[in-house]
Structures are given as C-alpha cells and as structure tokens.
Image (cartoon, rainbow, N blue to C red; front, side, top):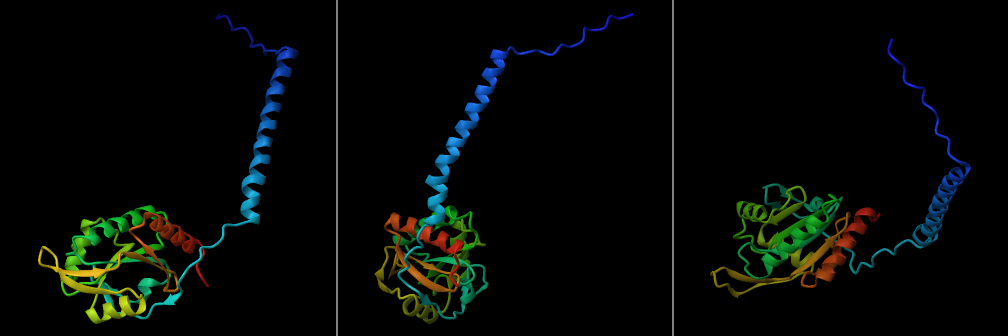
Length: 228
C-alpha cells in the first residue's frame, strides 16, 4: 500500500511578522490617501471650480449657400460647412511655392486631429479652369488626403470668387507666370476655421506654426462645445 504524503500544515507567522505586515498595509493605505488628497485640491477642484476659458473668436460670419464640386465629383453645398468643424485653406495644383507647404501643413492638421472625425478639412482651388475633378483627385491622392475628412473643392470662377473674396474676405489674383508657364496666382496662406453652423470664426496664419497649434486647439474646443 502506497504511503500517503503528510498532511499540509499551516504556516504560522510570528506575532512580530504579523505586525510588520499590518504596518506595511497601513503605510500603503496612508500613501494612497495622501495621493488622493493631493490630486483632489490641485487637479479636480480647480477643473470643476475654474473650467478653462472658451477661446476668444475674432469673427462670426455666416457663409452663404454655394454650388461647387469636390475632388470625387460629389456636389459641395453649404452643408459641407455645417454639422461639423471645418478647417479651410486655398491652393492650386500648379502652384510651386506656398501651396506644397500649406498642403503639407493641412495633412499634419488632418493627422493631429484624427481622433475627432467631426473636424473636417476643405481645400479650395483658386485655379478652377485648370483644376478639374480628376486633377484635384490626383492631387488629393498624392497628399494622402482622407476622403472622409478632407475635400478639395472647385467650381465656376465667379462662384469661387463670391465665396472666397466676398464671403470669406480673402483675396486672390494672378500676378504673372511661374517658371513652369502656369499662372502665378497670389493667394492667402491663412487657414480659416468654420464652426458647426457654417460661420467663419477666425483666420490663422499658417506661416506661424504657433497659430496652427492655436487653430487645432480652437477646432477641438468647438468640437466639444458646438455653438447653439
């Protein structure tokens, strides 16, 4: 008959070791309590009692109805500026100076705001005679634009001028030709911020990266605090 293993015996800690274990748990609870006491008055209370101030927006200009087309061939109307936050810039695909830089910065804005899909981007061409839907589609593809968030828009030149110059108050004009022979169209490098109502709220100089950071911060604030 096989021998049976001896029965297990409970390990008995000495009173000294038991007291040491209790002291360790007590110290851990005290440390956790101190952390809570530090966090509540220094972080939670100021956040509740003194919430961050809303941004001070310089503009509140309602945009009009528009009848344009985006790079996928879809109609672009005023609804393209409503029910979400929109960041706008101006480009033309044959531009070889400011546009590649501002488009790269718009791509950075798209990437940096990817956690908020209700922040959209719109690039408006100021050379619609050349920038057809296929041309804009290739331009969008070459810059990695997310078609769900970033639209490249064209239309009749008069419609573009009415929106850009009259409503958005941003001028553009042809000032000679580029080395490539394409027209040199002088236009703004500013980014524009549009709220969920389709109201223009501010201009942000893309040459100043600090202003682009401010733009993204303001866009995030509007995303969380839609105007009523």
